[in-house]
Length: 302
Image 1 (cartoon, helix red, strand yellow):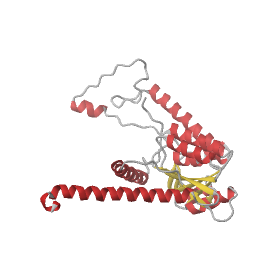
Image 2 (cartoon, one colour; image 1 turned 120 degrees about the horizontal axis):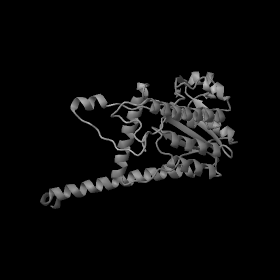
Image 3 (spheres, rainbow, N blue to C red; image 1 turned 180 degrees about the vertical axis):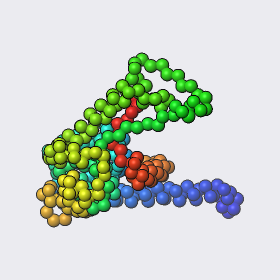
Image 4 (cartoon, rainbow, N blue to C red; image 1 turned 120 degrees about the vertical axis):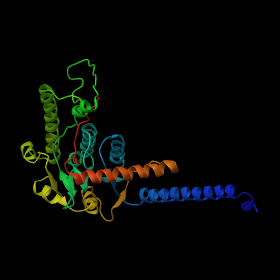
């Protein structure tokens, strides 16, 4: 028999058939779930998930724009589970949400953590729903780096820097920061912080001075945030979806629709899943560390 004459080839053929069947099954399941969501009758609430560090805005901008232009989607829920990230992407997402609320209701649902840049994005919505124990707030900006000058001297390394201007190597880890550099970076940080406070004030319809009183970087539980006016309601994702449906004028059953996921080759799919799990774990650990996890931080490189 073929299996006895060519056992290794037979194994490869069987393995290939099993993998192919698995890939086909996954594709069919994704297609069925996606089609069921998109073809559901009735008016819908679009749900967009924002998770992990906010380092890029392109995909989220496209998702928000498509849902805003879809007449079948009457309201949007932003499910946020993020400790923050870089300034530029967060500001771009905030701006897109502010454009969207002019023609469609948007509700932010805060998961386990929506701090700093995560809260910054949420503040652009029409309303915010948080769990009582959600970690949120952390309205502030932080810049930092590690100075290796003493270590380099100890091991006998002498870094050489050639620069075109006084501040081109500002933040260098191989020398002590000058006083003028410290003043410049503090001024820059204060400017970004002011923008943060002003945008939260505009989105939440609060006075800048009221936001300023809690914009010292401290974190709040969802319950505390509600007392300070940073959150509107306490509840879970389903509560946020129901509220968004009400704001969007939906009567009866509320159907939800999520952005379609990009199709990847099977191996890339597995690698992407692994990468996301690693990123999610790192984010969780960073959140628990508190001292370094809630970052609404500008990128300090070129």
